[in-house]
Length: 297
Image 1 (cartoon, rainbow, N blue to C red):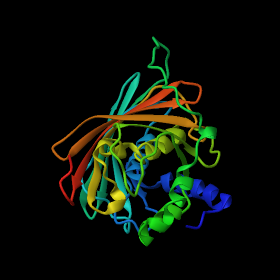
Image 2: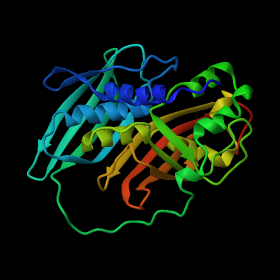
Image 3: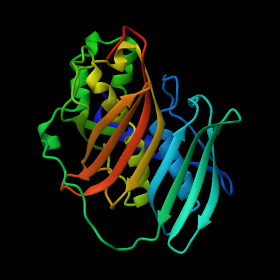
């Protein structure tokens, strides 16, 4: 497994920013593209991030505080995605937008987002869990490199490509032979290169990154791994609430848990903190989890 150079990693952040920089093709119509990778479907975080960008392009001087989205069909990475924005409401304090993502003439995804004029008010938050700091942990790439020779070539190649988001798991699960674990995981992450100060960009990068590890939480108790090729998994919906400003290019702790799995679906929740312990975002997602091998508990 060849490790990408620091320059390649930094360029991957620039590529992510370019990916989020949608082309305006009409007043409320935008076009996005997918990276040139061999994966069979579009990464869900990409569509969330691009849809939020499309909504932001129709809003002025307001900040997103929540979004709610549904994944309807798998995205085709070989063709552009058209994002159609419905300007649902412009109020005195809040603005609401609905975004529909379209490919091949059909909806693949929709998102509703609400934006607010910044204001002050009551404040409280849940405490950040006590976990090791990112400097004390091995990166996800280092953990994957250690098992690269045991992986199918296509997955090893996927693991070795440059990535815009650096991840350092606190309590990783074995990819090859996963033992059942508590449905709880903590992950430090950040963009691999500094980006501009624009809060909208940081929110869109966070929306992209929020889909990277969350669904894994609900399969941890069952001793299975997507690397086996026997697990069918996909995000079904995704919700985020932004509580406070943050920087996506500084370390953030993503603490995730899964309270339930049933009906071939798993529910996952996440809280995102700065390293100083400020809660900046909350996430919830339900995902499809089907095992195609021997029965699992």
